[in-house]
Image (cartoon, rainbow, N blue to C red):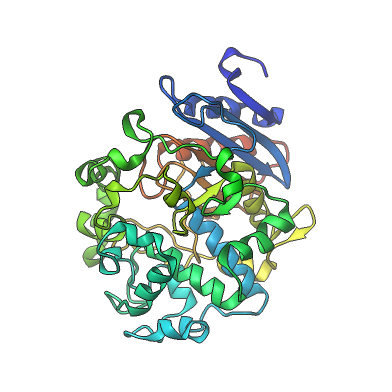
Length: 421
C-alpha cells in the first residue's frame, strides 16, 4: 500500500476504494490504544477487508481474526435470523408472538405481533421494570421469565420506543421457540455455516477468547466500568439528544426526555459491569453482546444488498427481503426522539454528502455498525474497540458510511441515487 499513513493497516483494498483505507487509518487513535476493522462488498465483490491498531491496552496488534464486542450492531444479525425463519414459512410477521411462545401472552401482551416487536412498538423497552440490578441480565432464563411477566408501558402498535436491551431477549427467545434450537446454534446453522463466517458469535465462546479485542473505555481504561451513571449520561445519551433537539421537537407527545433513554439503556448497576470480564463475555445479552469481525458482518449484509444472496448462497427470498427492509414508521419515538425510519429490525443509515434512502442496517453504541444498500449493491461493516458514541453509532461510522457511498458512486456504471430513492 502506498503512503506512510497506511503502514499500520493490513489486508487488501480494491483501487477504486483506496480512499477507504485512509478513512480506516484516521479511525485509529493517534495516542493510546485501540483498533478497528473495515470490510466492504460492492456488487457481490469484497472490495476491502482491512484492519489495524491494537486490540488491547498491552499494545497487541489487531489481527485478521480479531472479533470485537459490537453492541447494538447485534440487533441487525438477530433480526436477520428471524427473517430467515419467516422466509421458511415457520412464522408470520403479523402473527402474535404468543402463538410461538405462549407464556409471553400474559400481562396484556397476547396480541403483540412479531412486526410490532421488530418495529420497537411492543412497549416493553423499560429494562428497569424487569431487573433491580444490571447483573440479572446475565441470567438468560431469568430474563425470559421477566419478559413474560412484563406489562407494556403503552398500547402495542400505538407508539414506538427503542428496545435498547429488551429487544434481545424477546427476539432471541422467539427465534429459539420457532427454530426449536439454541440461539447460538441457529446463528451458526443459518448464517455462519452457509456463508463461511468465522467471526460471528452471540456471547463469546471459549475458543474465540484469544481472538477478542478488549473493550477500551473513555480515558484509555480497559473497560467501560469506570463510567459513572452521570458520566454515561453526559458521554453517551445527552450529546445525542442535544444534536437532535430540533427533530425531536416536532414529535409532539412522542418526543422523550433523557429519563426514557435511561429507562431503556441504564438499569441500576450498569456502570459497574466490566465488559472485559469472563462472565460478561460469556453471557448472552443478545441485543448488545455480539462478538463479530467486520468480514462476517459485511458478508451477511452483502447477501441483503444482493437481493438476498451472495456468491450463490441465498439467505432470503426477494419477497421476504423486500418486506423486511420496507420502512414501517417515520415517527419520532419515546426513547430515541428522532425518526429512525424503522424497518423490521433495521433502521436508516445516517450519512452526509451522499444519499442512501434505501440503505438499512444497525449501528452500535461503541461506533460499530453494518448495513446494506440494495440500490448500489453495497455492504459496509465496521468494528472497533475504543470510544463511546450514541445509541446508534458515532461520527466514525457516519464518516465511513458516507465515504463508502461516495467511493461506490465513483465506480463505472454506478447507479444514480437521489433522496427520493
